[in-house]
Image 1 (spheres, helix red, strand yellow):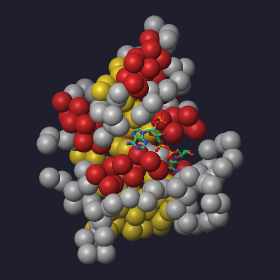
Image 2: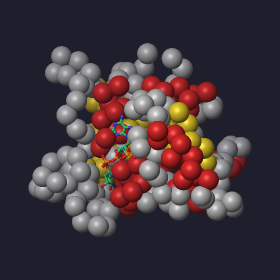
Image 3: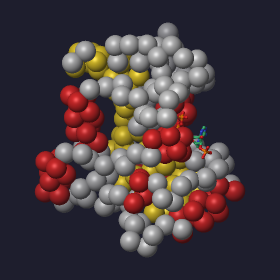
Image 4: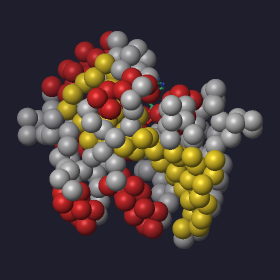
Length: 232
Ligand SMILES: NC(=O)c1ccc[n+]([C@@H]2O[C@H](COP(=O)([O-])OP(=O)(O)OC[C@H]3O[C@@H](n4cnc5c(N)ncnc54)[C@H](OP(=O)(O)O)[C@@H]3O)[C@@H](O)[C@H]2O)c1
């Protein structure tokens, strides 16, 4: 199957939590790490999150640095990435900032009854918003279908920025190429806090581990980069 080179990026606490249970998004990283993640984004064609992240954080998913946006323009690319959301239900907020910002449009991957609901929601967006389209990626949607569709649209490099269910989906599929983890030097310690990943059948076992290709400190945050050897 043709698919984009797929990088999973996530910031976690030492106890594997990617947020706390409070209403504000928890800062698990620092400016230096944010800048690296921005650079990582700028080198990709598309960025993907789950509907849970859309609801919790209302992210814009933009390239933040004007210099990086300028560099993309000079490369003949859009300033920002094509944005993508995965939802089973199609229950997405048409006023979410992800849909109203950027210059490359958005895709909503869903399936079954979710397709009609997502189309209905997207039709409720203001006409001046960038284009957005609902795409059938199976019921429930699969990483394989999403990646095949993105490849067919010319996406060569994808960054997946969570949340935990979406990281689980991509890691258990064996279809991701790289994992970049920023591990904050503290614990959350709350059973109800969102996790980096859920239980599942991961291809990366003690017998077939991931390859750690980089480990360094970035202002006290541990940046770990794993090769997932998943490229088929
Ligand atoms: N620290 C970080 O780097 C980071 C990054 C991103 C997010 N976060 C945090 O992560 C939390 C959200 O994570 P999350 O795990 O709740 O949500 P998520 O992974 O962002 O999204 C989960 C949603 O994906 C949809 N989905 C589509 N296909 C699915 C499938 N096959 N299996 C499971 N879900 C599928 C479902 O949407 P429907 O309900 O619409 O069907 C599901 O509710 C937030 O607290 C956010 O702040 C942290």
